[in-house]
Image (cartoon, rainbow, N blue to C red):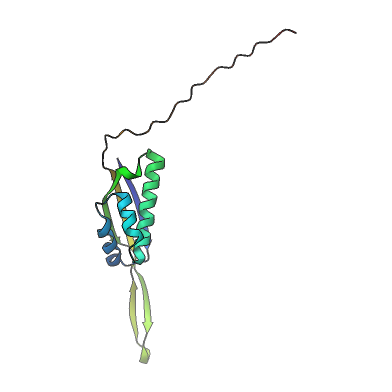
Length: 134
């Protein structure tokens, strides 16, 4: 089963985020979380939050075990650019382009044959009340 998560408009250049994405691509979720916790990079925190979010949705929505998941695909694409101007002497201005990123993440199961914990069905018991004569 695939679990997808997206992060849009991250205010970090895609080139910098790709360095962090390459660290965790193909790793198991707990291993990737541990690696990102000790990575000194601004975008590592955002990628870690995205992985945690995807793992939590897998656990909550599909009853999957976090230890049975791995990062099958993580892509970093370019988002919209913010265009600013830096004033210089003699009335000149130089452009500043502030880049943003979109991150797409797909988690898959390592052992898809592993049984999911099924929800227990509660048996409904009919209550019968008999009137007792006094």
